[in-house]
Image 1 (cartoon, rainbow, N blue to C red):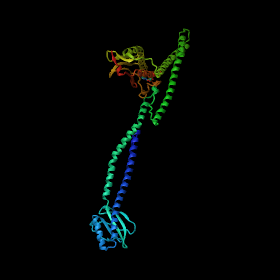
Image 2 (cartoon, rainbow, N blue to C red):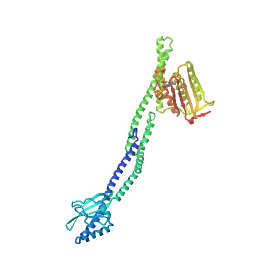
Image 3 (cartoon, rainbow, N blue to C red):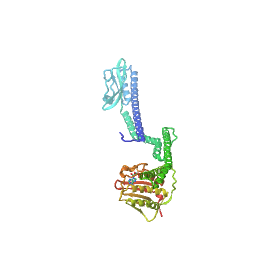
Image 4 (cartoon, rainbow, N blue to C red):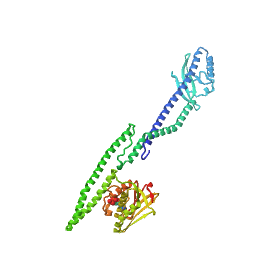
Length: 467
Ligand code: ADP
């Protein structure tokens, strides 16, 4: 038995081969029975004709003497090439012994006492024969006319028929299986196309549809049904995206108003310490909420593909210098060493959007600063790995558990925040990933807990330019 998943084409091929094989066996058996019957009938006719002839001669010699009649029988025997024929009396004696030695040596079956003609299968000297026994009455004497013919030639015909049938079996089985496989592959080709298209559809490109063939069959119905489902999903997801974007947008105003009011209140020198603390909390929380809303708005825009980023040649080294300038102050404050290295003296330029790339790098640096305890290191490097511009941010921080690694680019995913006691929204890396996608660049991470993490942004080959 086949274990594990078996493709439909393979199953159809096996079925096709199996059905063909059963049909072939049935055909062979029917043909064999038919052929055997035909050969038997041919033997019967040959023997019946011989006995008819003998009977005719005996009838004609009815009025002759016994000796003359014996002569007639001998002539008959000679004329048939001393063929196997005898005339027996009803008690089994030879009425006219055949001059043929073969007939004499032949193991004739015992003659029957009935009136019906018999057609028997006998063995003589190890060879198979057909024998006809016909009761006959001559001048009141009950006789039995018998004749025999060998069956060997028939057996050879039957044998070569079987051999031919068997020899053709593997070839025909092969042809039928190959035909079955070809047919099933052809019939299932649309399934492969649908599978490939379905695989390429994700939350980011729900507007894509499965290919619909015009075959008016089950596959067309399946593709149409899936497309209708995708249509429903697409509009539901769009509704959610619109809601998120609208909500984030609408909340920005009241939030910045709250923050401004709290900041104004803080400027009042007469405010009592308790109120001051409350206003400081409001300003801090409002700042966090603003960051979160900004992140949500950015991703909402990303979902609706409405980015104002324009890709043009950008000096990657300048991006690093600007982002690291800001990060260096914070690193110093936290007793972390921030180093920047470039592979060559030349500046590396890529096709991109300056402010988006700066934002991406800032997200990586901000995380490195947040998740690296002091004293620690943060290394930013620009290099050309196999001809592709590569930006790496490596830290000696707390690292990320292997189980978290596949999810850290998901929205709102935060890897066990209790480990780091660091605040965050879980949107930073999702935004970084979106910016990387915008640049057709690959953002990946390698990390080991308690050792550190390395985020690597690899640009497409054509973008690399050294100045
Ligand atoms: P957050 O606002 O929580 O930092 P991010 O999307 O930027 O959200 O990061 C997602 C999660 O990935 C973080 O919560 C953190 O657990 C993990 N992470 C990201 N960068 C690092 C890093 N440099 N070191 C350790 N963990 C990190």
